Length: 253
Image (cartoon, rainbow, N blue to C red):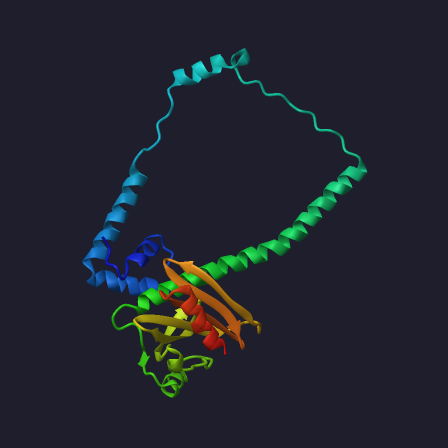
């Protein structure tokens, strides 16, 4: 069985679904984790075995003969159905229907693509959170002082993340680090609630728009995504959903 910390990433690595950064990190992990290496080797061996096995067997010719003999007339009869003639008005109606379908499809397809991209980003957010919980990965800068954490990002990102300390409300800031999400470097601010860590991923929006937090659950982790002040915010934790919502509301204020 793969180790608990990286077991969630093993299947994604096996299927080639990790980005370059996570692929390199997981391959480094494989060098020091015999459990994951053994699990990966067994899965690769199983895949190769399935590919090399002949899982299909041609039905005997006698079966085909018996089936055809039981059909009416002893064989399948194919009939040509004449196409009805259409008037000019009918053809214009068909053309109009095609144009409308193309127009509606053009409006729906971008939304589908946008949702798929959001799902991929959510997967990256959870993967980044899981990776951060490994020893030594949670912080690049460890501090409860927002005036220490915020300046640390200067020169490391092309934007300045908003950093606030919510210790009086029970969500103290404990540090920050650089991460990589949606094809770009982002700020990951780390907060704590009792024994639970919250990763708040922040990066600029391509379009300036505000949106309320949208909750979802992935792999047992609660996620909230919202946009505000020209920034993308993704909060993820194993906290209960209502507590994570309280955290998001404090950040938004």
